[in-house]
Amino acid sequence: MHIIGRFALVVALCAACVLAQDWEREVRALRPASVAAREQALLDYVQSRAQLALDAIPHARTPAQADSARPLLQAQLEQSLGFRRLPAPDPQPRIAGVVQHDGYFIEKLVYQSLPGVSVPAHLYIPSSLKAPAPAILFYTGHWYADSMARPDFQAFCINMARLGFVVLIFDTFGQGERGISTRDHRRVETLLVGLSQQGLAAYETQCALAVLLSRPEVDPARIGMTGASGGGYNTWITAALDDRI
Image (cartoon, rainbow, N blue to C red; front, side, top):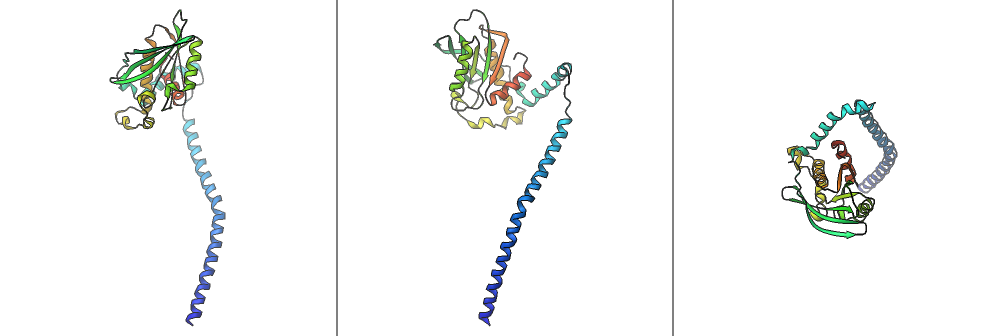
């Protein structure tokens, strides 16, 4: 009886295993559809909430409405960035060297964004200027190792200088000659005093603009800006805040 009982137990366990495998196959067959349905329901809900939020935002329909909305929007953007909490830019640039090329030359500049914080920059100047020229500020974005020395950025600056533009490009914080620190792309400590990560970029842009506008080669009425990656984003922010761009 003992042997028969053990045999029966083995048979029962085998049968249970077979049933469990069948049940698992059925659940697996149903699970993707169930998960997909739940995911779709969640996405539909989020999309509907986002659409309600977007629909609640008043949109300007005429140039006059857009102009009337600008002061409030600019004030809100400045508040969210917090860069006005920092001192007025006083970059005090100095020339560290000059490199001559065909049709243009580069001044190697060093200036301060904050007291004791040195910023290296390159100023590309057309060789044949006879009057103040239009200028471009280039914000590099997130290329930690080479930053303003990146070959395609140099190519852009060279071509614009040969076309008659003065171009200023600089190493942003945590990049290039300022030391590589990828953490500087996600700093949050300054939020404790009301300064955002993007606010630091906006402030350093103001410093670079002060350098650019201090130059006699530059026409202050014709200042443009561009950038790559985060530099493109910073261009949008700066152009929204600063009518000199």
